[in-house]
Each structure stands twice: as structure tokens, then as C-alpha cells.
Length: 435
Image (cartoon, rainbow, N blue to C red; front, side, top):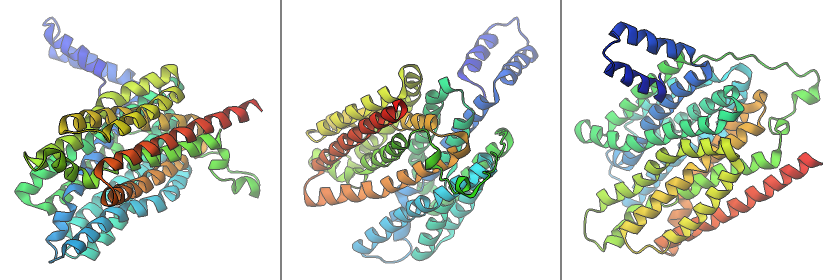
């Protein structure tokens, strides 16, 4: 895995004819060997996050259509079963993530990455083989139990990256994950069109197998279990009791939950809102797809830049600015009158997302000792899973009882609450530090 610098050097050497191909290959290999191991791990895991994000997202958009082929369901039944099959994976993920995180702190993060990759590979195939809705829901639940590739890749990188590179590293991992989630539905749509919906699940299994092999071969972790506590009280000391600032850590958990909630709250009704703005004219599906993709595109473009900025001026400043910007954009979105302004606002939401999750992860990394970093990141994954459940539910309820623009008013209020929680937590953390 080579950095952008290596690619630039490679291009220059190719254009310079005085070097032979063998000399060029030796120079590139030398540069790779000189790269620190934590950076090699970062690039491999970022690509693994991209691959796992691609596999995860290529199935979800077609889940209701896949379920509709299993039996003759009424619209009410189809909506219920689709929602249940979607949510059950996040429910099991929220339950078991702390258990996997504790095991990762005891045995190492790489084994947990391999467990997740190969576990999701198997359950992906089994979901594709399901011919009964309850069997599919069962395997979706088991699939959620094996999740954790992203959280453990974050924990592994966080335990190795230099302090002045943490924000940029989290930004790179976020770019990989979001990029995969963005391209996944496109690949899944093409596969489903040619070979059917089941093939998307099989392909997901294959992709997760590739992610597991990449981690197995290229990721190197020098893990040393921390010294076992000498007395019972120390043994029973929880992971949260060992963090540097508990109020700040809890605030980052809440931030992860609310960011996921507000980002996904509009997903169930975005196509209906687009249809309303188009007044029944134009291609609703195409425009909805573009509108849905815009936040991801913006996040890919900006995540690593905001992470780098956080390393330079402090993650707290970027995080607070991102929350303020997020609330303003959500409120402005409630006033849009056409799809063009909606698209601009959704793009700006992606910019704000790029300043939130990576920086929240950086703050978490700075407050979590190596002995508990996996557990802390697994707790964050649990909160993200909860946000993925309550966000679409709130969006559907608000849109059903009020209007589509009111969903954005709700998200603006949640962003303001999130900002208040973060400011109070940092103040409490500083007071504790000065006490």
C-alpha cells in the first residue's frame, strides 16, 4: 500500500527515461520499507473500511425488494418486516459491541478485525440463502453480532498513531468507510439488475473475505496485554473509570449517536420529499439517488482535511465549529423550495459530518488509555448503532404527523442539544483538570 507521495514519485520516475524499470521498482520498494508500520496499518485498514463499507451498503437499499420476493406481503407487512430486518442488525450490534471491545483489549485488535471480517462474510452468504423472512431476520441479527471491523480498525490505529497525527488518521479511516458506503449502492444496483438481489449478499460475503485476507496478511500488531490488576477492586474497575475525562468521553458517545440519528433521519422520506419538490415531474428516483449521495461525496472530500486541521488547532475547536455549522445548515434546509437548494444543503451537511465523527473519534482517542481503547471505541459503535435506529424512526414520525421540512427542524434542534452537551462536557473536563 503506497502513499500519495509514492505515487507522485512513481510518476516522476516513469517520465524520466534515465531510470530502468528495475531501478524504479527498487526505489519504490525502498520507500515502502521505510514507511512506519502504523502508517502501513492505517492504509490497509482504510482500504478494508472502504471494502466493508461497500459490502454493507450494497445490500441495504434493496432489502425491501428482496423481502417482497419471499412471499405475498401486504404493504403494511412489507414495511414492518423491512424495518425489522434493517433494525435488528443494529440492535444486536449495540448489545455485543462492548463485549467484543473488552476481548480486543485482552487479546489484541487484529484478532477482532479478523473475527468481524470472516464472521460477516459467512452471515452475508447465509442472508442470501434465506427463503423465509424470519430466517433472514435471524441471520441479520447474527450478522450484527459479528460487526466491529470499523471500531477495531479505529482502536488499532488509535493505539499506534503519533499524537500529532491522530486527527488525520481518523479522517482517513472515515474517508474509506464513507467512500465504500457511497459506491456500494451503485455496485449493488448493477449486480441486482443483472443477477438478482441474492447475488448482492453473496458478493458482500466475497468482499468481506477480501477485507479479512488483507488484514491477515498486511496488518501487523505488536500487542502486549497490560499488567493484570493486583486486587479485586482494580480488576472490577470499568473501562469508563479509567478514561482521562469521563464527561468528555460520554459527550463523544452522545455526539456519535446524534450525528448518526440526524444524518439518517431523512432517509426513509427523502424520495417522498424530492417528489414533493418536483411537483410530480422529472425522475424522482434519479434525483433522490443524487441527493442521497451528496453528503457522502462531501464527507470524502473533507474528512481527512478536517482531521488534519484538528491536529493543528485542536479537535475541540473543529468539533464545536462543525456542530454550529451543522445546526445552521439543517435549519436552512427546512426552508428549501426546490431540489437544487436541497442538493446544496445536503452537500453542506456532508461537510459538517466530516468535521464531526472523525474529530469526535480523535477526542475519544486522546482520552482513552491504550489498555481500554478498544472497549471505548466499541461503546461508541453501540451508540452509533442506537442512532441508526432512532434516527429513521424519528424522521418517519415527524414527517408523518407534521411535514418533511419539519424533519430538518428536528435535526437542527438535536444539533443544538449536541452542541450544548459538548460545551458543558469540555467545561467539566477542564474544571476537573484544574482541580
